[in-house]
Length: 179
Ligand code: IMP
Ligand code: MG
Image (cartoon, rainbow, N blue to C red):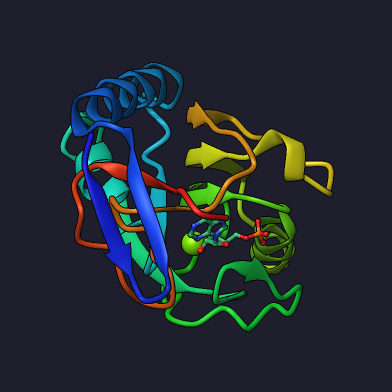
């Protein structure tokens, strides 16, 4: 167990890198199996999903494209409910299979909004691959195709996820201690 301190909060080891990589590898195998022959476009949602995207893509062995977009809705440690616009999508996704690569689905509002925006561009199919889901916080109907891990409703950092911009660099995932 390791404890880290970010600003006013403390976090302790929750999911080790070893466990994360095991589940990410499993998700990659599912995608390789399901999307063989469809030449998908992976759409990584920055900033939070950068580590997940890297480890996932290292295990994808079917022909594909990777692109990166931004759509932030979080401020501090609680969801603001406000969702910003999608930036950075230059690819034509008409008729394509798109796999959204996200770090975490909390209320699901960010994902719902992103799917709506993407659907307007006429893809063939949209799939969701997320590192984490907080099932107890989900507020909207979402068909989540690939999930590395379900977690309880606590604030976490590490492996790309941040608290106020900090903590993304850790290779393990940490959960908050003094809530
Ligand atoms: P949603 O719209 O409520 O689903 O929020 C999703 C976004 O909130 C994610 O893409 C993250 O950037 C952020 N987020 C949600 N929960 C956490 C957490 O526990 N730690 C860090 N960021 C989080
Ligand atoms: Mg995110």
